Length: 139
Image (tube, rainbow, N blue to C red):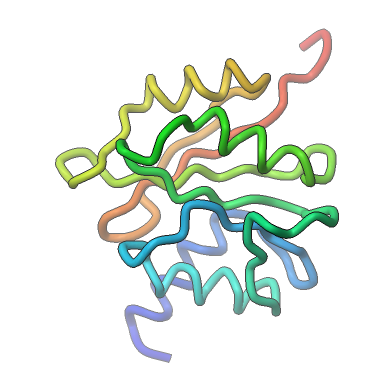
């Protein structure tokens, strides 16, 4: 395994996906980080499913850029088929990169969707990852 592939595997592992899980991918375009995608698929042992998938998923990866429309719509689409408490990861271009989305914009869309931002970190050379989760009752 090359050093970059190994680094991609380590970063993908931070997303918390496991073998056998079905992960939905939204917002795919030619600018996504292919090494990260391949690493996620290596971990789960399956290709990610697209927005047309209508069965239950274990998690979601949303590639989202400034000009991609309404993030809330993407989140609602992902939650439609998402297993309870499955993670949703919003991958957005890092600050200073074309298409950068501010953390406050991600938080606003999450709140509107009934979610909240849990953690954010650099996931790939040009991408940051923000994990969104549901708010527990009484917590």
